[in-house]
Image (tube, rainbow, N blue to C red; front, side, top):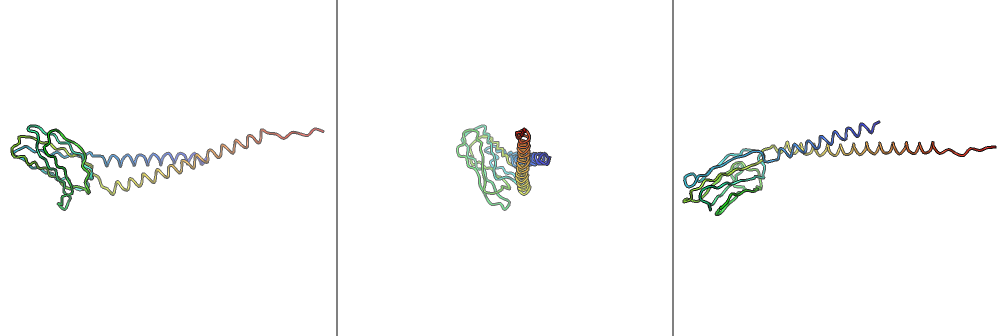
Length: 184
C-alpha cells in the first residue's frame, strides 16, 4: 500500500512544479505598458521612467499618422544613466513593431524624432515585464526540484506497484500448478 502514497505524492509534487513554472512564465510575460507620444514639429522628444526590475526584452509598437518618412530614435538607459541600447528607424513609412533585447535592465527610455518639417504624430507603446529576478529564480528552482521529486516518487510508486503485481502473479501460477500425486 506504500505505492499508493508514493504515486499520490508524486502527482502532488508534479502539479506543484507545473504551477510554479506557469507562474514564473506569467511573471516574465510583458504585461506592463508605457506609451510615449510625439507630435511633430513642436514636440519632438519624450521620455519615461520605467523603474527597477524591468526585463531585458522589450516589445515595441510604433504607430505613425500624418506625414510619413520620419526618423525616430528610441534610446534605453540604465539606472546610472548610461545608454544600453536602442532602436533607430530611418524614413519610417509604416507602422512598426518588434522586439528589442537589451544587454541589461533598462531604467528609463527616451524617444526623439529629428524631422523639423514633418507634421506627424507618433504613438510609441512599449510592453515589458516587471519582476524581481530573485523571486523568479527561487520559483524556478522550486519548480525544478518539486518536478524531479514528483517524477522520482511517481516512478518509485509505479515500480513498487508493478513489482507487487508480478510477485502476486508468480504466486498465483505456483499455486495453480500442482504436482502429480502418486497412487499406490
